[in-house]
Length: 247
Length: 247
DNA sequence: TACGTCATAAATGTTCAACATAGGGTAAGG
DNA sequence: CCTTACCCTATGTTGAACATTTATGACGTA
Image 1 (cartoon, rainbow over the protein chains, first blue to last red):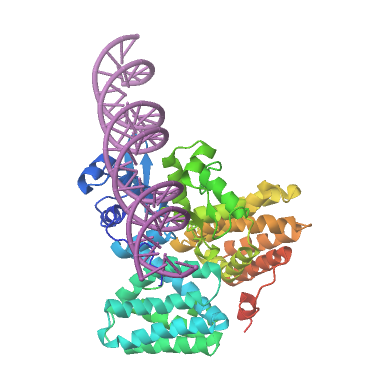
Image 2: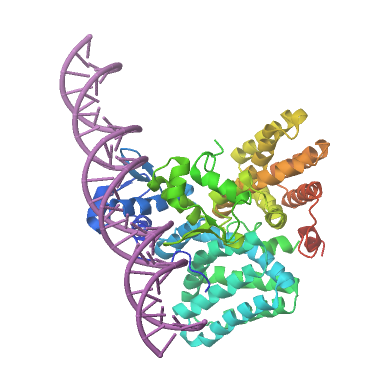
């Protein structure tokens, strides 16, 4: 119901992407030619071309007529394309770079998202948030399990949607895989899940009580916890929200 | 050099999109069947199917096997897909809704982008920003012209890129068409361009001088001017940044 | 008359084979 | 050594045939 982005996981595009993210083909390299892929995967040329077109649309590869398909530089990848983000999250040798940048982005942005949610959330939104929270609480013993992580992600996404702004809602789709990645990795590095759960509860309550300032603070605390669990240092202290807001 | 998103403007996908945004086909309606399009546009079925696949990837239409292609609801459109945003900006009967939401998003976000730019901008970034500003100044007499607007857009995009964060930079690609739309429409409603230019200069200087707080303030002022020129009222004053920051 | 089943038509999905075009590499010639 | 012309390879395009899904209408039975 949350609406998976691509759902499929065995298509050619996915496998090629896994190979690319696995370093088998690096930017500048050429991936196998159409006919070779047809042979290796037992697909018709049309299918192959269709999947390659998908990669082209994501900015992953460029096709050079009469020559081949070259992997493009990371900077060319359309990482706001839900499909691309999904690939990166699933198969990503997640570039520590990308990981840090996404976290940095969330650090800047989510406190405001939390504030907006606190002012705009409807009863319907609150139900979604609470369901996710209770899902986390329920799977508490199995921390680190896929189910717990899914609920954690659902919690954050529900907050994005509660802003009732088109752009933020769509951004939540795009960020979902990245958030998932961060959640999984941060939950792995966490031994006691209780403090994290408490922080989430505080955020939920602040939104329910329509207390934007409290919600912002709670969001900052959660993200600081995430950064700590990941061992990620915020590059420039001047950028981080807590520093900015203490002025 | 700024890198157009799709560049092409006469392909089938564009024309269909123009028709959809023009209201000729509304959400829920079915667009013509493949064979009819082949006939009308003189294209091969493969070509038609390729273009339709593009629309599908943008969430614009859904194809129902054995039945036809239905226009999806606006909420399903992937407005963070550069191609989609580009279409909306070029052919858009820009839903006043979308316009307001994008402006709202920028109001929340750009002050922070300005701050980050003020702390992270390199000499190279400053050159880009200044070039755009001088471009605006140079075309001052022809306010409302395409050239003036382009420089205006380039100015804002350069600031996004100066954050040196992957996500923000990519967001600038996505927001470019939307910013363009807002710039054009707000410049139309403006008689004297000088105050706007002054506000832009102030932002540029703040970034150059590495004064984040001043940059934030300047960004807010610019956007307030835009909102005013568009006659857009910020929905919930509690959301707007100036209100939040005066606490 | 109402309802379920089956046949048919129409539209999309898939595959195959042939030809067109672009780009790079190579070899001949100056 | 440089230039030019040719050829080969891989991608781009087209057309037709076949498969699958969906809606519609005819038919028969209760």
